[in-house]
Length: 151
Image (tube, rainbow, N blue to C red; front, side, top):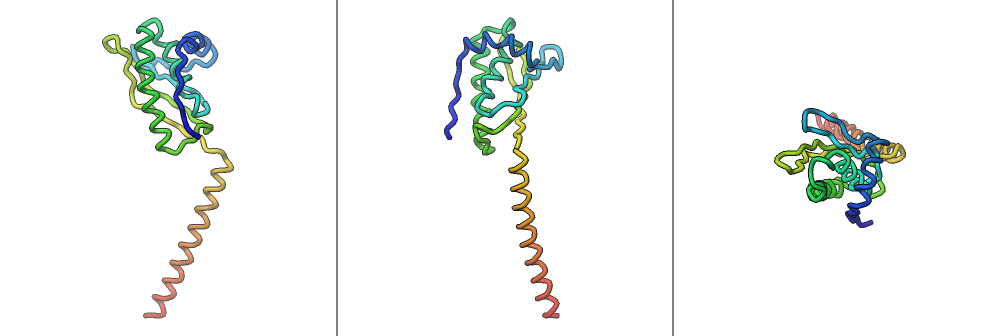
């Protein structure tokens, strides 16, 4: 499935206050330094959550055009990382990033991406690892037997 970043700025501005009241998607870390978070979301919706939280936190501090510009750049960066990690658009993620305002510009730090893998997938991967381990163990035992006959 192909990913597509969507921007609906007016909707995000309207939902920003609601998001803060319901989810509190930010944390004041120091004067003028915040951590904004998506909470647990489907990967395809991360951009909306980050943009809404940015509007809620920085809406009265910087112009909306600056919020759109900065979050757009951040969302592209996160999108590229998600794709390179192999995250599907329906996978569950949680993203957090530090943000501050410097000289009228919204500056984001390096985002932290947490990818939640379903229990069934973990079990499948564990089983695959156990099978590979059993194969390697058997090969080692066979090599040891060969070595002992050569001595």
